[in-house]
Length: 249
Length: 262
Ligand SMILES: Nc1ncnc2c1ncn2[C@@H]1O[C@H](COP(=O)(O)OP(=O)(O)O)[C@@H](O)[C@H]1O
Ligand SMILES: [Mg+2]
Image (cartoon, rainbow over all chains, first blue to last red; front, top):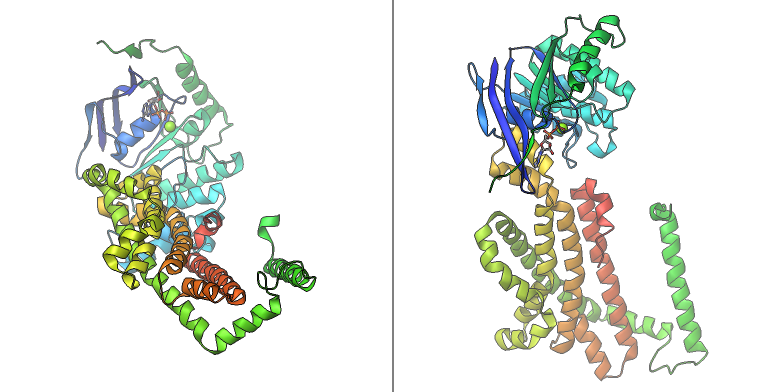
């Protein structure tokens, strides 16, 4: 279980104080699949970076009941090391923790699971965007994370590849049950993937939608369409206009 | 695409270029357009080459020059790379030593020749000193540029994987810096070769530069030309070897290597 309470974060941009996040309260139960959706600039990446430990909040705290979770992150870009082969990229974070033999076993298993076995000796420059993102996912999964953070990982992919990656992600989640936080600006994607959709606008949570549709979901089905409409309606209502404030001297 | 010609076409091009130059050279001297003293015909230069080769003299001078480059280049590289890492890691070192190095960088190595001769004499130490001065900066600056350019996004991957500062430097920053380092290494090799021959022209008793000035004193233009050609060929050969070495050690850099000429 992960508990975020009153998370706030601001940036100073050219003398202005820009609130990226304010008063975020969020509970992530173990093994849940949460999607966070909102227009670009609403603070999704900032929230994910705070969860990943790459940024610290100005206010509030992130509490985990129990030991600190092992975290895996998939960024919007694949971020592979261009000098390492696919298998070495996947093993990148493992090298520190486990012995050679375990690494080989785990990497092989993940290569099979993600359909990358034929590419194990390929260099990143030789991969298509979809394949590269798959390697990035494998690199996160091989760490056997308790918490998998994904920042618009499929946004740069074509519609066909995105569809199949979404399905694969759902199967992986069902098989291993990590807690997943998946950020996207695509309402359809948020509804197809998440058990809960968190709606973010101008740094605040403006709504939550529970999606009670069995997997694999049909994005064009009636229930999914209804959910999508409800989420969109809340995201499109105008939010509070007091976000940008001039710094008092 | 002209940049990706097959090897066979490349060799063909080189042969045409060499053949063309030889023909023009031969035609000019055959027609008597320039005095044979200023530009001896190809055959005469070839004979001089054969004579120098069979007497072992050519190899002797080439070896002497190559050794100096090898030692000087090796020393410069093994100082420049760690120093660049220290500079990039430590703000204090940067603040103190940067102005000094920036000043030194403005001075052409050959301008330091007189001083080096007074300090180090006219032996090997002075030649190697010149080479170190000539090839330190491209490697040093290349490495620093490469470190500065390391992708922050890749460094974040390291942080997420739980790497500490040193591991991030070793496993992400260093490999990221390699392309820029390779450019520096290649530029330096060219510089060191040029600076050495310059030094040998001024004060030396062995080496390709010496071979040329000595031949000039004896009015042997043919030997001067042999010396120039050998310098060019050895320069090309070492550059080629360095390129091959880099291609083997860092195959993902194929594209960057072609930009590294100076
Ligand atoms: N490093 C930064 N410096 C200044 N402003 C930033 C920085 N990162 C994000 N912001 C601002 O914070 C807000 C939220 O950004 P972000 O979390 O990246 O949004 P999203 O991922 O939803 O597009 C935006 O207004 C953005 O301009
Ligand atoms: Mg973002």
